[in-house]
Image 1: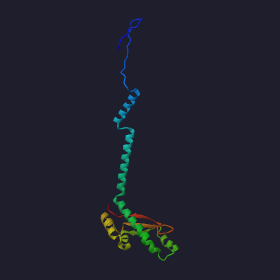
Image 2: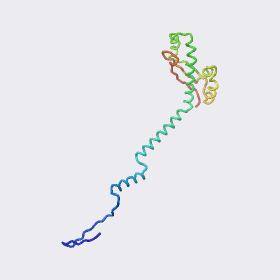
Image 3: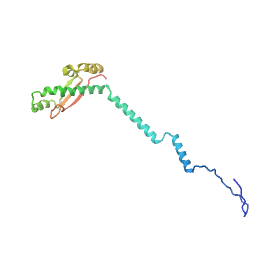
Image 4: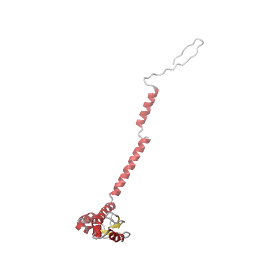
Length: 174
């Protein structure tokens, strides 16, 4: 600070001097804000991204556990065997030498009660093609009862090869 004398009297004025830099004040503020943002990784955006990724990961793990659960594995296998049994074997046997009307009458009897195909029936079908697979991968591995574990096939109108729904009944120790 410097003191100056004026002509009218002696008064002291303070002279303020600032250090000049090459960067304007706005640029300094922007750089400071950027530096602060770089230091703070816990921004709302980052928290949302990390949280979302965590939720997706948890859902994926739960989905895989459910998909590959023993119960679902056996259900899918029995359902697949039941579909093949009905469409490739049983329907052909029932439809043989019958008109559409006769076939409809026969299959309509099972519309409500269903056609039950247990593991024993499925393993003997197709000339024993799946016998070893059923015994090894279902009965022994998951300790399933071969008489009570079954596919129940419900024929639907118009009673064609692909007109049915299947429900699975399991009697296994998972």
